[in-house]
Image (tube, rainbow, N blue to C red; front, side, top):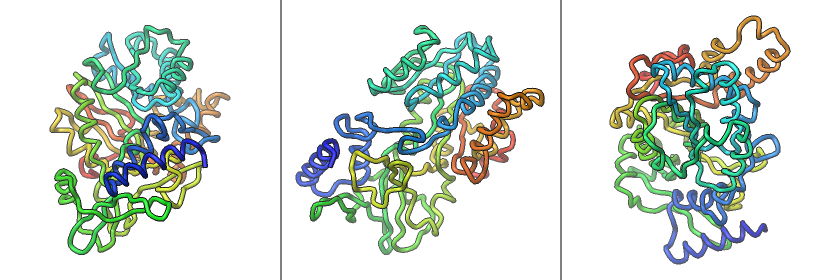
Length: 379
């Protein structure tokens, strides 16, 4: 067993022996973000074909180039301010940020000149990787902060790709006429799920808004999204919050037939059968209930500007990017192959959704959402 896994197992076992079974939300927070043994906290996550999971950025530079078109349009919706901030949280190696800045420098010099890049990154190892990846753009162009609360007030866009699905979630189950929380115990040498009374008033209140579900139904509740959005909104003076992630509107998320929830564990591109084994060595993820964002937004001075699946989002952005002449070039043909991966419904097009919230913007019409239909009706 790897040393890090021993460290994780011993630390969690000691905590359970002292406290008793711990809520799964606490377990997930430890195994993902503990600085000594967490999958992310100890910088063990590997992204791409040779890693544990594959992201939009792994497809190649096109994802960043298309989003650069969207960011430039946002800049114009804000009246082309002289100081336009692109904030990325969860930038990993910095490839997406580099692709965006390269694209803006190539095809929109005015927007590039106005743009400053802020990376929300608490991990020193990833900051070093990002610094190296973005070296060509100069130190004056890029800034780092540990958390959204450390950002200055800004106008621009806060962007995240597969951030929210990594927030620790509560795991709950329906027993008779009430909900129970799934906690983690250590029994006979392994971690196991056990039922526990729900101690969180906030969790109880949230569960009261879910649709009726059958006996034995298990699912997740993410209570971290609303406070995260509040932190971001408090720093956004005018502009957009754009998030792309796995997930569903609430009515789809909590369908009766989705009786095992969405919690998943991944290693080497394979889904692990037991999310409680190999603590700190595998990725844990749960889909996003996008309705939480839509419900929370107006309480924070934000309005819903768009919601759609990635297929329609990419098609909308392609109209800004692929001219007929460019599509026929060698470079254009290469990008079209990547585009098909990003937008195809059987690949990534329906696995991901994009949601956009706006603040202090008169015209919120954005190309990425032009084929998305009525966002409010979906959410």
